[in-house]
Length: 177
Ligand code: ADP
Ligand code: MG
Image (cartoon, rainbow, N blue to C red; front, side, top):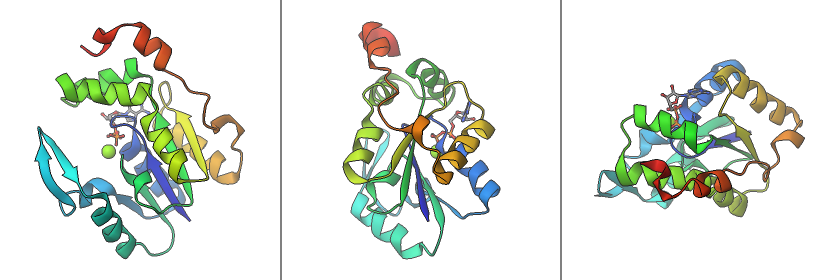
């Protein structure tokens, strides 16, 4: 089985995938490690990634079961199950600030989370998509949630239950500054 772990930067994909990988003894592929090979240029301080090229690369190296993690992992045309990690923008902001995000880049990511961008993109491309609210959870608890989903206990994680938009946008456009 190929498990896709996606979400806005800072939602905990790498942390969760590492824990999950050791828990279920499954290979973990980190998209960020292939970003340079699929990079076609730079805009501001973000790389422009050729998703087709990235997908080809990943498909070539996949053999058997794998966890694929990264904020583009749901766009590769592979995967049996997609887990979208979600984080309340208020909490996400603190995590991203700590990681050095600022200005436009910070605002773009918080807005993407408030607008469910990764979730919507995943639902457009995959049939088994679930979301986990990681805002108040430790990585261990998040992995327990993932294991429940893999066992078929999916009710709690069906898309559409998480909505940060009202809180985020009613706080005004200055929320991210
Ligand atoms: P992503 O891969 O989605 O960008 P990371 O796994 O790199 O996210 O985590 C982003 C930051 O948030 C890191 O500083 C990490 O230590 C922290 N973090 C990750 N998961 C959690 C969590 N469940 N609770 C609190 N902080 C977390
Ligand atoms: Mg990461």
